[in-house]
Image (cartoon, rainbow, N blue to C red; front, side, top):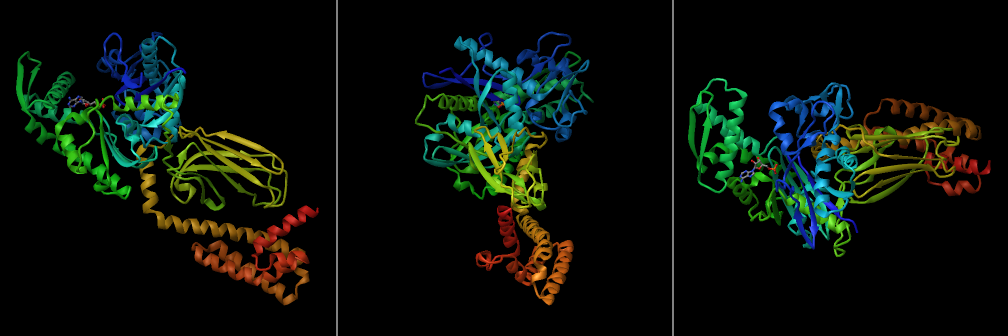
Length: 618
Ligand code: AMP
């Protein structure tokens, strides 16, 4: 069995790991001995090959517009999603492509975020190959739990571009839990606190019989160790007192501040030495107490999303059985202490916090290689998948938190006589109305033989693979006409939007319910309004004139209510009233044997039944 590698594709740094003789290990660069590969790619002018990692990182200062970092923030997103992001990035994003972000490298050269990520992946792949002495073709890659379909798809694309078959995309908090062996527990509720250099994520997971379910996610995409450095650097610069310090001095202050921060993680004081532009030296001792006072508000800022995630999941801190801490910044003692106090238990921290996610990815890879047949690990889908129905409501086929892989099938029919095509609108999200969810794709099923409305048997199948990637197929069963799409989502939903979508599904539940009820009843009303006139033409003459007239005026009234009613209860009442008046017509239409079959059925049901009969007899 060829080796499957595990990759943590990070915003700042990336790592590769694999399981060797049953033990997960992080692979280091043969020359430098480094495990962390900075997720930075430098594209030299001309035809030279891009540089990746440390050698690219040093170009950040001199050639910022050709040195791409933080590409993960752009993965699977559209231009408008990253407007706020692009303001702080020193490289240029092309405003021309709304769907997929393109980075302008100058001289008309453009790259997409998956391509940038692919250079990082390729470097890690090569590292694994040199370690193993064999070609590596398969990988497990981790992504944040809040990553939506487009972002996962983009990550998969990056793998493909790098020549890797991404056999599984795993949530980072799930990987961290695996690294700590939590999958061996029967069940547990787990909080994964991840504070890196530039991002903070909190994820709450539920583990049950080897299945990890994401209960809630939260965080701050612009909060991390860098902010600790900047806070201290600002204090240093203020004391140095040079008005408007230049970029060089600011950069040196940051570097010095970071070094002091690291030292303060296991010492009570650190000495900062800075050479000033006039050649003099600035020397200053920073104590841990002082550093903690300066950064206390940053630590507090990480706790708020934790409380919010708990509230979103309907949990309190006492429901949390395990706390896992990930990311380089958890080495700051005040961070550790705050998390321990919040959750009231000792967090897991004994593994290297930079390596935890990669180690977990390697364990998942090992499971997929079939080396641990005692373990079946599944993930769940973070958002529901469904179709827009007539009237704009959503018919959900796969629910949020369904185990993946998963599939679902739904039957439906046409609403207009002679309809030869249907347009299916696939959406993702928790809201009741399609417009409030994220549009994933539109699929057209054409070539349906013309039949009366309600007669075609349309079947749509959703297949969600183990990576959370959806494939949809639609078929007209009677004629066998078929159409498929592999959902290649229109990029453009940011992580906060996913979080918001899930949160909003709770807060808007009542409005949504009313909107959904209205859409449903409108559909029923339209079907009834469509069939009643047909039945009147065909069977009206068999009714006594006064009965027919009362049906006709009832129909006009019902039609009017349908036009103006925005309250589902009012429309429902009007429809019930009309169906009552029209019952003799429905019954008349069902002559002979049909009559007793449909006794007590609604006009719509009766007419549908009738049309099928008519068709069969035709
Ligand atoms: P990550 O993005 O997970 O690699 O985290 C990198 C962050 O961890 C950077 O902000 C580092 O400054 C920070 N970091 C690394 N080592 C330490 C340490 N010993 N004490 C405090 N922060 C650290």
